[in-house]
Length: 284
Ligand SMILES: Nc1nc2c(c(=O)[nH]1)N[C@@H](CN(C=O)c1ccc(C(=O)N[C@@H](CCC(=O)O)C(=O)O)cc1)CN2
Image 1 (cartoon, rainbow, N blue to C red):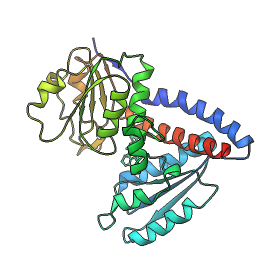
Image 2 (image 1 turned 120 degrees about the vertical axis):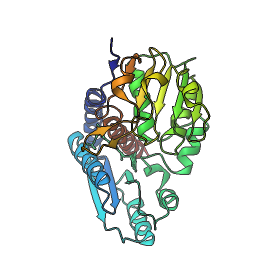
Image 3 (image 1 turned 60 degrees about the horizontal axis):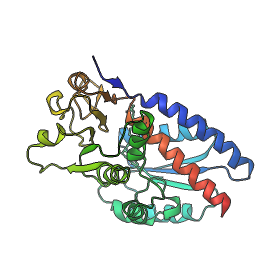
Image 4 (image 1 turned 180 degrees about the vertical axis):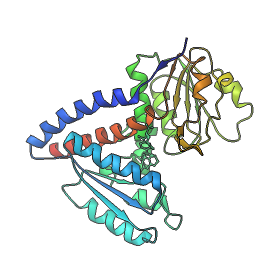
């Protein structure tokens, strides 16, 4: 029997309607949640994601601005824009779409965003807060993965969780969130010996490698929860994940599809972080 599908679109719809209701309340108090999205360069996927983010903001009743800059935009110019947005009282969240062009040092840019407006949760202050178990803003993709797990009432406490991929954006924060929820966590990376030995032991398997279909069906434990963070475009223009879905669905107990799994949840949790930033601002 194939695995149960973890439908990120359906869960997003439910959470976004809760966000819209809370947005109406905070807006009535005089604070309309505001998100500024900045994209530099012409990366086609980034252009799609930022448009989707702005559209999602409109749908839940946020104020949003999209700032698009050419590839040649300098780091100094970008830092200036961030300083202006940091001081703008109508903006509660600032997001700089990644990847940035190579002449711009991403870490400098991310550190320039005021931590209380860092709705991506990438600032070292927010990464550190998560590390010590006092999260302010959780990075949107791992936050979305945790919501997917919570939605199936899977007993995370005591489960063996394996994360394939150790990025600052997904793998490391995902490990922290699972650890804090009581899982026994292993993070694998590109140097890990006998990867399948680890993945086959996982009750919860989270894959974020950027390598299309690298996790094959025989690398998955029977009945596991498989969360595929990868979004890869195949030569025929279709999307696929980092997990070989067609094979893994007959081994896993639950599995996220690509598209329609983690992707929409990333945007939903961005809305949640922005709403929470505005709610905090309204109480300050
Ligand atoms: N500043 C950030 N940059 C990037 C992040 C991030 O969280 N913050 N994550 C990724 C890209 N990303 C969000 O920006 C993202 C990726 C995918 C989706 C999504 O909804 N995917 C759909 C398919 C969409 C398509 O047709 O291409 C799906 O999976 O169903 C949303 C957001 C890197 N950069």
